[in-house]
Image 1: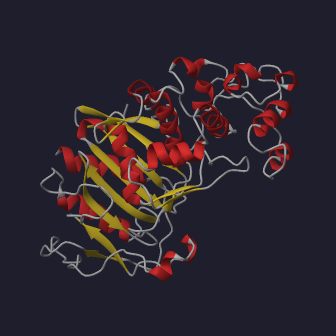
Image 2: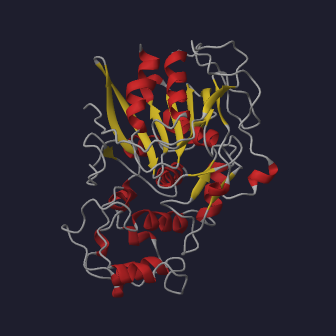
Length: 404
């Protein structure tokens, strides 16, 4: 099905940001608005101490069609020699620098594992991690896949009651239907919890009712009964929180150590933050922070069917299911052509007479880790934008840049 995104208007911003290329090439546009090597998007030591919202805007956007190799384990290449249409991609970068598509902080493109295009705008910095918002959910899904690959969970476990993995709970106090919440249901936002605003607010504060598995106990005591009628798609609704509780229960040590030792360290991701929730476990639905370059690594895992440098990190079967079209989101702001797997979105983008299976982790503000298997592409965006239209540019500009 063809992607159909309504492009919403954005307010005109007086500050126009001009492009500055980090390549040593001569001018590559007729208006010569792209400069030569000189500026970088490195944050200074002083900037690194600032909050995201206190970071000064880049005076000039940073654009590189031959990204530099850094000490981060990411191979690099050239946009053109890797099949990209330089004019198309640079024009999009120019428009993003002028905020014609919203407030975006970075756009990176990798092909077949090589970073071949890198750009930063506004508050984007090459050496600073960026908030992932709900793209964190996609990372949490990959953690589940790692637990399955290592044998701490099985594919059959996905259909077992979620509470069967949590041994510190008192089932006698559960509401009716608690056993209906399976890992599969929670991973597809179909857990079915029903809490009122007052109850949700109370569970935001640290207490003996929110620490560790006690949070799940509280949820299953406070919720209205769980039925087939309540187990409909409901984004968030503590579903990722419950999944992280299972991860913490089944892996050796803690979920936090497991994520670090079994994924982040193996992928060479050291410049990150992953905030803990009120339960003391890593936030499962938001609050992770990654550099734009490291976001590419998560996409590389998806494209490589869970392999990392020859090691099978993620279960192939799990990843195939996680990135499939299992259900359809019901929010009115999500295009009808978007489907949902296990915290990953799926859509088909049609270019000419060919359909391209496209997956992405998506976070509010414009955080995307997009993978297109048939083209070997990973595309990363970060931003602080309220209107979600950048996927239109993936369809109209980036894919044609690699298919025409």
